[in-house]
Length: 342
Image (cartoon, rainbow, N blue to C red; front, side, top):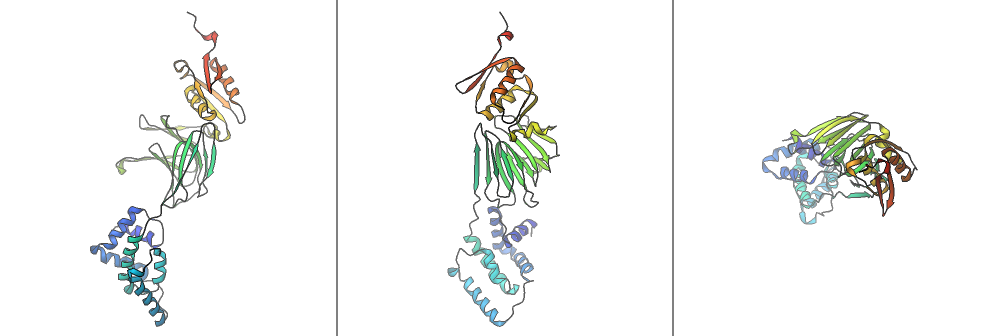
C-alpha cells in the first residue's frame, strides 16, 4: 500500500479537497479486488476507535439506516461523504467494512469535483490597482499587467498567474504555499513581501524579496531536473529567458517597489528601459532614434504627483533632446546644437 494513496484516502476521509486525478486513483484502489485486504485494514484503523453502541434499540435504528443505504435506488446523490460517515461512525468496524466500501464506490460514481473559479484583473496602461485575495493577501498591480487568481484557494496551494508586474504581501499559511506562475517560472512562498516583474515584451523575469522567504523554481519536463533557488531578503533574481539563465543581484528598495507610490527611480539604467515604463505609466508612445538613444544611461528620480512634463524636462536636459506631443505620442529629437553639420 503506497503512502501516496493512503494520504489521499485520509484527506478524503476528513473532507479535505482532493484533485480529480487523486479521486480517480482512490476509486481504483477501493474497487481493486487485489487491494481488498488493504482497504479493510485502512477502514479498521479509522473505525476501530469508535464509541460503543449504547443499546439494542440504537443498533436496530442504525441497522435500518444501513439497510436503506444499501438500497441504491433510495440513495440521494446529494448526500455528502461526511454525512455518510456521521451515520455509521458508532457502528462496529467489522460490520461496516463491506457496506462502507460499497458506499464509497457508489459515492464516487455520483461525485463531481467542485469547479475552482478564477477571477482575472486586467490593468491597462496609465493605471494601477490594488486587490485583496480571499486569504487576505494584498496585491498591488502595476500598469499594463494582468493577474488571474482563484476566488477561494480550495486546493493544497494558492495559485496566481501573472503577466506584468505586481507586489505581494502574502498571508502566512504553512500548509498552503502561495505560488506565482509567471513566464514558465514558479515563485513559491508561504508568507512574505516580494515583487515580481515579468512583462511579455521584456527578456528578464525579475523577482525581488523584501521580507520572508521566496524560492524561484525553473520547471523541467523531468521533475528531478527542475531547479529551485532560494532568495534572501534584499536580493533579486533575474531570469533571462533568451539565455535560460538565472542571475542573482542586489537592489535598492525604492528603485523596485517605488512604483506603488508613483515613484519612478532609475539609477544608471538604459534609456530603453525607462521608455517602456513611461509608456506603461502614462499610456503614451515614445518615438525616438534607437540607434542614438537606446543604450544611453541616465539617473532619474520622479516622485508622487509630479507630472509627465517634469520627467520630459529631465530627459531633455540629460540627453540633450527636444520633445513634443503629437497625436498621443511623445516625439524626441536631438537638439540642433548636437546635430552634425555636413
